[in-house]
Image (cartoon, rainbow, N blue to C red; front, side, top):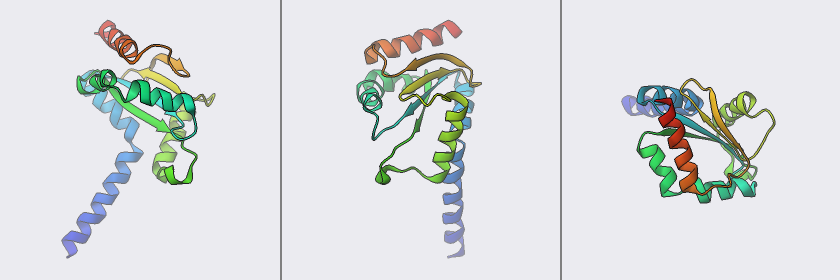
Amino acid sequence: MKTLFLSLIMGMFSIGITAQNRFENAKKEAAAKNELILLNFSGSDWCIPCIKLHKNIIETEDFKKLETENVIVYVNADFPRNKKNQLSAEMKKENVALADRYNSKGLFPYTLLLDQDGKVLKSWEGLPSESALAFSKEIRDIQQQRK
């Protein structure tokens, strides 16, 4: 019983640490695999262009291949407004810190392509005009130029 209780406590603690260090983990993963980081600021339940970006680009197979083929590590800094969609306090804190660092104007959607050190390589304000395939190709081209 004591072991089970300790396991549950440790598991809950590790989840909090993971959420709190999501961006740092992305930087480590990107460095280890020579990937880029795609950081997206969105309002998933109120921002119509954000919803379209996720539906038409981020949720497509072309975009998902970027992750499975070790091109990018994807981080979504979401700022939902509806009570039912609220994030944990740790996640909110991390998203605010990311916004303070990378999105001081409060743009939504705002997408940044970063190197493994967090340096901005490219940014997209608003909904990108290109298709998911063209968006993914642009990211691949930037990665290829960096090799």
